[in-house]
Image (cartoon, rainbow, N blue to C red):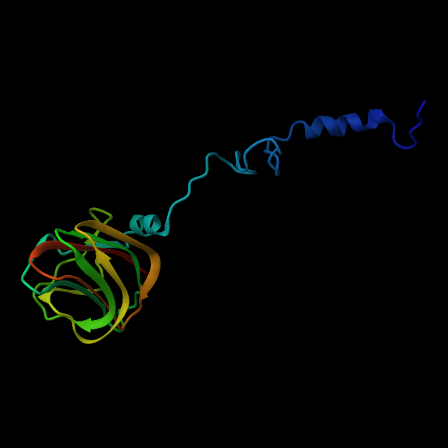
Length: 198
């Protein structure tokens, strides 16, 4: 026979009863179940997770810029440039660059450079119907990038489509320029640039 010294068992019953009424899930997952099968201590389930790009788009601060499909002359590149003027008050964060080429090509992304103005495509706000506009100045042309520049990355491409995700890891503050070159010629090519700004 075992003898226990202390509070009578009957005094624990109200405590056990109240513990049974707690509705929150256990803080720790069961050892025989997959991790994080339930969210803990939440008002509602399931939880919703969104990317920075999604939040910027919902706020009307996410932009798209395209060259459209462009026929490249012999030995020339498709050039696309965005300039964030000094004093703009906004910083650009590059989300991704996508596009395609009908033949093997090289894609190069630069900091700086000069593009002779051929056209000035207008950035489109991805929150359709928004009146918010981008602060950038744009330039598009075919040819060769001039001026002073630094290569950020160079990527050889086969014919077809491409996409590079940066998720905001390339940042263009006021007073800085981002240039993109795709080529060389005798083919049709396109560049699409996506970014958000705050």
